[in-house]
Length: 269
Image (tube, helix red, strand yellow):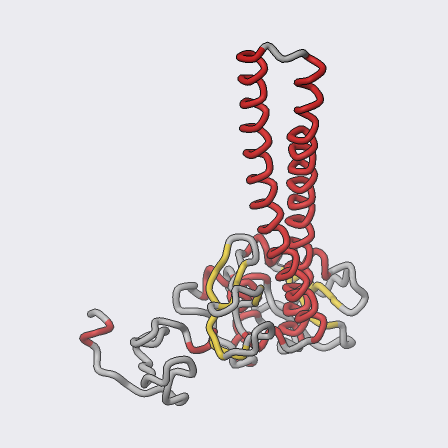
């Protein structure tokens, strides 16, 4: 049955925070504007109430200003996360400008050199004259190459800034799971791939305040280090934290096979 044929049932929120339409519990998105209400919030860059959408280089961006964002506004509350997102936005805009400038400059230099070669052949100009005239387009071509290299460097820095912002958001999430969480849970909440979540957790695991606990079935539970609290079953963690996984991701895919009822063995890294 399509969304249009289902009866509208108002959610507890009542209306969409973006367009003001009545929300429907049968659909994860607003029927009028099409955005997911949980992805609507105050943009940390332009300060407008807007939603976020996926973007290849930045992950998520504001629909209004195009600034770097995370999947949910609640993850952006930390000042360090906002600083990394702001830096990624600045570098992204600078890289776009440098790529456009270097492309135009390289094309201009190439066309100019071709014209000079043609004029030299037609008017039989001396080699020294042609070389002298070609100095300017050659310098432009060199500047284009430098700009292109600078843009590539900025792209690497953008990836690092986004990674640091996601790490900050993951630390905030781990604070909501006192007994620990598996990578699939964190990936689902942050709207990133499972491989990306594992990469971020690998970086976090070297910190003194982050602890990984290996269950007997081989799954890793990550948590904020807070003493010798008992480790709960991974499925119980999701229920205890009142955080639901998205409907499109099954609990089996998110947390793997159910942990054994035997006591777990803590292996602290």
